[in-house]
Each structure stands twice: as C-alpha cells, then as structure tokens.
Figure 1 (spheres, rainbow, N blue to C red):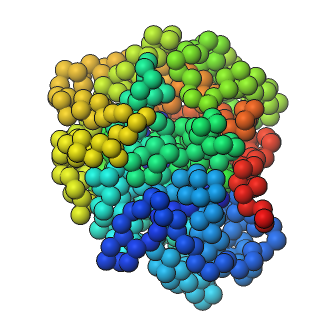
Figure 2: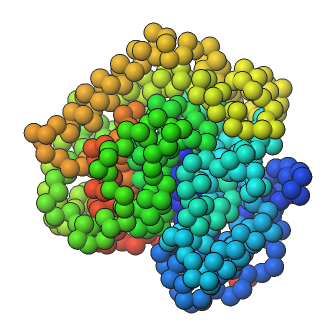
Figure 3: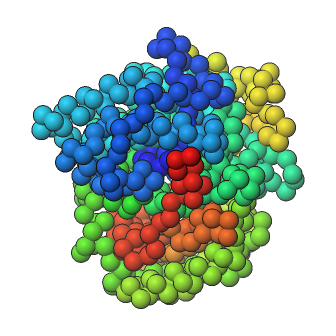
Length: 560
C-alpha cells in the first residue's frame, strides 16, 4: 500500500509521503496502548468498494481531493481502505514492517467523519482536507491521537507527546488525517555503526529498529534478504531523499530552516531537517507549502527570507515547470566517473545507475536545459573525510539535542543518554540481537566533549572547507551561473554534502535495478531555491516514464 507521510532528514534523510505499504500494531484501549510488533491490526469492517480510477498505489493527493469533492469516496472509506492494506502486508503477507503503529481505529473514523461532515457543509480547509498521511515515528503526535513517539527504541515504547510537532500541527490544521507512524532505522540510524558503512561484518542494519524489526522495500520479491534494502533513516515512510529514491517517489530535503523541527526527535539541530515525499511533484509541493513557516521554537526558521514565496504549488505546473533557460551542472568525478566503491549502498546496481544517468542527462538537454560537466575539488579521500567529519559533528551534538527533546515526552523510561545506554544493555537481547550489534555511536556521543570541544570545532571546520568551499560552494559561484547540480543518488553519496551544508535537494525516479529496486536522480540548488527544485521536478515528471507501482504489492492485493 502507498500514501502521504512525514519524515525526518537526519543522517541520510527524509519526511511526508503519500505512501503506506504494510500493516501495524494492534491499537489498545485509551488507557494502555502497548506496542506489540507481533500482533497485526485487525482492520475493522471491509472498506466499501472504491470508485473506478482510484488506485491506492498511485492516486495522488490532488486526485483524491477530486474524488472527495464529487462524493464518489469519503475520508472514512479512504481510512478503512488504507487500514485494510496495512493489515494485509505489514506484519503478514509481504511482511514489509513499514508501519510501526496505527492510531486507534475508532478515533481515526471519528476524525474522518468530522472532516467528511465539514466537506458536506461546504468547508474544505485545504487540499489536504481528509487525506490520510503517515508520520515518521520520531516526530511527535499529540496524546489525543493515541500513538507514541518512540524513534524505534524500547526505552521510549510508551512515551507520549502532549502536543503535535509544529509541522504535524500545520498538516492537521489543514485537514490531514494522521493515520499511523512509520518505521525507521532506530534513532534515525544513530545507535550503532551501520553495517553498510562498516569495514567489518558487524553493525546495525538500514531500516531496523528494536520496536519495528526489519523494514523491506515493497519493490523486491523476497524483501530485505533478496536485496530490498529500503536505505536511510526513513525506511518505513518510503518503503527521504535517499529512501524516496528507493521507492520511486518524489521528495524534497528543504533548506535547513524552511521547516520547523520543534517536536522532532533530533540527532543534530545543526543538520537535521524534515521534508515531504509523495507520488507526484504537486503532492510534495503542497505538503511543503502547508508545513513551512517561522516558528519561535526553532530559531533556524527565523532565517527564512522575508520575500520567500508563500505558495509553492504554482511552481509544479506550467509556465514554471520547464528546463528552458536553466543551466545545470552534471557532477562527475567521484560522483559518477569513479565513485568510491565503499560508498555503494547495499542493494544498489551501480552499472545500471551509471547507464541510466546518461539517458537522464540526454533527456534534460532535450527538454531545453543547458547541461555542462562539472567536478568538485573532492576525491575519494576528501569524501571519506566529509563522512568522518559529519559523524564527529553529530556525535558531539547528539547528547545536548536529544536530551533537550526528551521533556517533550511523558511516560518515558529514560531521562538521559547515559540512562538510554544502560537501558539498552539491560535489554540487550531485544535491543542488540544477533546481527544488530551494537550501540557504539551512542557510547561515543556520551563520551564526546560537545559543541565546545576541539573535536567539534575541527569537524565543523572540515565540513565547511570540504563539503562547502571545495564541494557545493565551489560549484555555485556567480561566475559559473549554475541554477542546479545533478547527481545520481546512489553514486558517491551526495546526500552527505547536502546534509552537511544545509542545501536543498530533491529526488525524482530515474530507473530500476534488475530485481525491481528503484533508484533516483537528484537535483541540488542554492539555499532557499525550492521553487526552482519544484519546477525542475515537475518538468521531469511530465516527460519521464511514470513511476511504477511495486509488483509484489500488486500481486499481494489481487483476490485469491
């Protein structure tokens, strides 16, 4: 199943997708809702027949709105249909484990009915009115929704937020229905060394958490073990710019500061952001437009330029949606011609990606873009230094930022990072089972000197020099006249640079590996140039092959 959701772009990054693939946990009574990953959600009565042309694996927010407006479907019916899909393939069926918990069904139906009644009475809050969405489970949802905010950690299994995160409140005020919380790599992949980046065979796995288990791509028959690595910290939601790439979705990682992080469980407030994923570019622009805004609770949002557009959806349509007169830099060198083999992400098909990029660049030129080959002053060693410096910065920022977030949650089992580490040691059989060892990143963060340490100062200087002066900043001087850079998401790990420097990035579907796993193309612009990103994404969407729906999910949904 697939539909909108919101996620956090942390280490590799992502936020809101019109995407729900799977099933969830059994809702308990309001007095006690204990997560039980082994118990499928019962689903409720079968959903009414959906109208012809409404495909839950492909229909956009805008199209859903048309069905809702003409009365051929209701939000109540949509909620029931999505819950039925979750029940079918999350913990049974395909066992995707994309959803960590679902709101109590009676509460969801009550909210949906209220929104249906408002629509019948002539009140439509926005284009998000009555649209079910997913929220990544490190983004706070208010107690009234009946869900916890866990980050995938057993220590936060029962933790509850009294208030919605700023971006969730904006979405709910616009009429969105928060259906469920999506899975993620535990603590946004900041617990132990990721096996994908570890020189040894040990480490933690993309898309695994103690509460949710192992998430798998919906595109690969046989799931994770057959190469269906969902990639990144937002695995359940996309099943990111990175995770969205592996779900054939459109996504934006916005400029740091465009979206508030208030109520979002952080890794690093110097680098984290949230951002939307969706079936279409218009969906992504719409969600970004609804969520953005200044928030006194997040000082980074006070940097939003005063003349920043208040509406972003117009850029997803003509005359804005075009490559005409745009100058793009195709970043080669270590990001295309000779990517570091140690940077390849598990499950990737670099030779296929390499060939598809040539077709993509040819298409961009045919669409009117002036594409030139460019290179950064970075080799393999420089990129590894960027990755090492990023980790060093996060390690020195995590304790202060994560502990600063904890007071947002009640009924938590820990109050400090040290207590979390000790909790994990006491519950090692569940928190660090075979194949998911260990928590050395958390231990390093506990021992780190923090923002005032020489190590943090050195890491920050390295990032500004390598990721900035010799990286992205090097390609965006006025004399080069570039409007955007073009990368393959899976070659050279370009997301490391955008995350380090807070540049906006977007991914669009590009192609598919032999096993069906999607991969994407990435655009990067100057800071605060999201309108340009959206215009390019929409021009690409109008000319490129329509995204494919996951074949395993299609087969699972056929009547037996």
